[in-house]
Image (cartoon, rainbow, N blue to C red; front, top):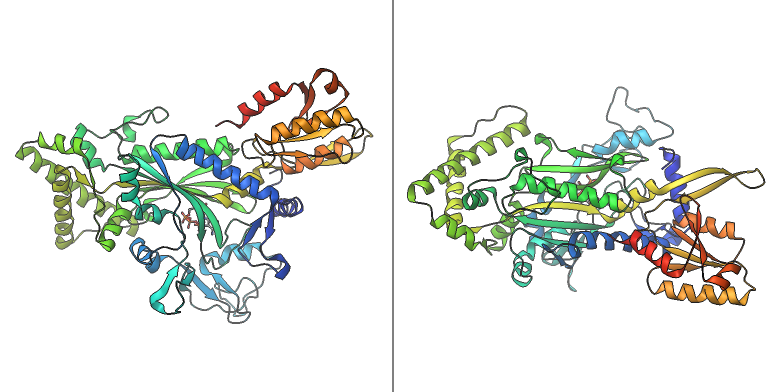
Length: 547
Ligand code: ATP
């Protein structure tokens, strides 16, 4: 985006409304905060973003399978995942204007205000950013939307709209494993709607109440299983080649970094240059208690640097929770691991168990200390508990059994679309042939995601031969990708309409076309024109559209 300020977001949202990318949901009834509809161009862009992700993450790989699960699932899933107990934001209300807001967003809301209110209670630093009134104590507010399944409105029938797509993947892990001919390490991917009753949806589509996610759960072996089978675990310190083929002896750290790099590659491929986003590695005290590492990929939106997506190393937390709450074992059986363990004598097994015990105690102690910001000493009871869990884990490993760990790249469709639109939007100051100042509004979207790939214009409507060639070409192209037909107005105006839609190629059929079959192809960003045949155009377009 040319100018990185609020007004450029206003200009972008005006264009999105005017050209049919994004509308307020239920607009004729006054709209609904946090809900957005995608119009004719927006839904094409969205389809393309999702298809690109699916191609990159699922179809383009041999080790990932897809899933399309329901939005409403058994409520116990949300108990097991922790969403029922802890998926909450701190909410506060102004005692004067009665506005509700997230306590942790007050500073940001205040910064957005044109007129900055002063606190009504002198000296207070916790006051309403809208009117300066006194605020209530923040209270946790669960973000899940509740609904009732069946005709009886009873607490026993309460269910929830999923707040993330990931949990269905864990709940269907065993089914996919047994029906997809995959073995760990492998992934399950899902795209679809998620719902969060965000207290303060804001920044256009960035924080919505209904949105779509694209999530991958990539299941890997615990490092201890790799150690047992290969006698070593590859870590980042070994400087592995993560751009090459994946390797069986990679530990979680390498897999995590591998997926961070894969996600960056994807973002580049759909049009976000690496220098426009940053990798934020969460600090040990910011990590969820079960997470080993988490990277947020952040983008410089016009309203500030914000999370675009996250890549988390979540240990075996999720499947273990589902095992505990469902009573169904989530362990996999790994025969080569069992065969490797068989070769160990009793002394080697005991040494392995002791090493694992001390590593687990050490890891828990370090994680708790990092969270607390001071040295935490575990009680003797806690140490015993960890050691006994480690012993049980090792005995299962010797039998070739373990609960897989997981790396989770989790992205938002709407957030990525917003980033792509912000990145693409430009108002260019040009001078027309008569020397007059002119503004060209253009969306520099990558051809891979652009809603319309090409537009076909016959130069002269009244010329039958031109019209016939152009229409035949249009019919031929539309069977391959999304193409528009435009015969109205001067060519310059037709170009501008397509520039605003982000169409990479405009094809003009003219007098010469009817003689030699070539037409002009005007490239959106450079505005250069080249004569091409249909075959030349298709070869060029296919190359640009391929992943
Ligand atoms: P945030 O801190 O911004 O609320 P989060 O850390 O809770 O996000 P996750 O639960 O990790 O987000 O969700 C994964 C991805 O889903 C996010 O990176 C984002 O792209 C998308 N996402 C999450 N919440 C929303 C929302 N309310 N609106 C649009 N996209 C969202």
